Image 1 (cartoon, rainbow, N blue to C red):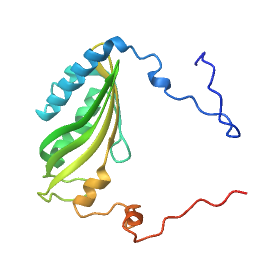
Image 2 (image 1 turned 90 degrees about the horizontal axis):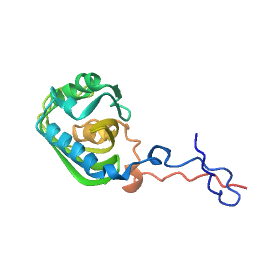
Image 3 (image 1 turned 60 degrees about the horizontal axis):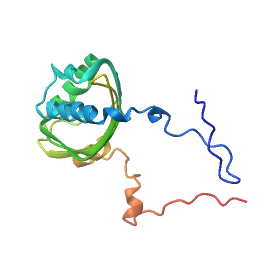
Image 4 (image 1 turned 180 degrees about the vertical axis):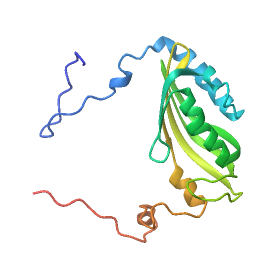
Length: 189
């Protein structure tokens, strides 16, 4: 529990939740080590390393993905329930971090993987198509190993590239194209 005094709330807005709790005790002296560990791990992913990836991860690390990706607890679960199925579905892949930010024990990146759809993915038979797999990663490094990895992989975008609309025509891109009128919140008062 935090001993900090909560910040004042905006007038008439009520209490606000605590923000940034996970990074409050960030050891800024670890910035170079964090960057080295994560960049080495990304090189390992680009080398398609599965066995041996534990060189970068704590044995009990947590990999927390969005819907469709799942949560992996430990290196073995990451290898068996993420890396192997992912590499079975997508071959010839390369990971390209388009932006990286590192501070203390934390590093974040977003980018894309470019790969060939060469195995079953989300019930879609292999198409041989080249796809772009967009992602965001947030890593926490302690003791020279990744202990936590929060991940968002845009599987919906991948499915659309493979000809399957996971939103069944109800995606909000229709608002952007002018095909549907976006709803508005009900008026207060």
